[in-house]
Length: 97
Image (tube, rainbow, N blue to C red; front, side, top):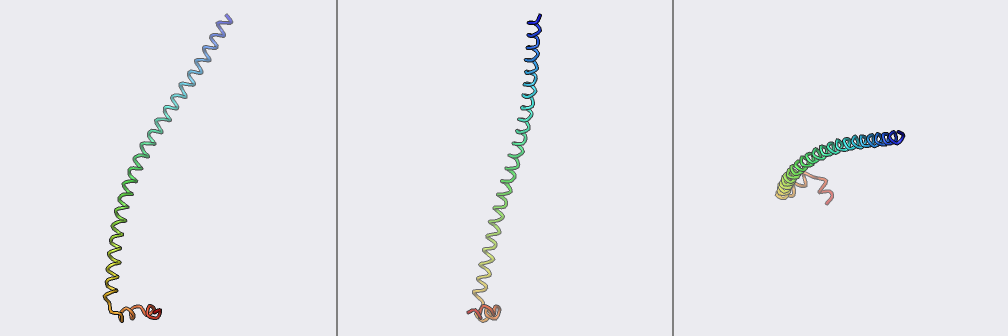
């Protein structure tokens, strides 16, 4: 009877260990599913941010081109103006010369 009781105790212990393993496995699977959802969300966010970066890059290029054009226009106006007007408009520049 003692052998039977010891065997029964061993079986119960093994069953309890198996149940703990099953719970741990279920928890690990839930955690994996959560990580997969996070990964998908982050991938979506990265794609959205790439699109925003491309739009900003395009906008930056357009602004740069407009500024270059404005600078050229201002320089051409300054180059066309007679020297006496330039001195009158900026008396400090003539004093520095």
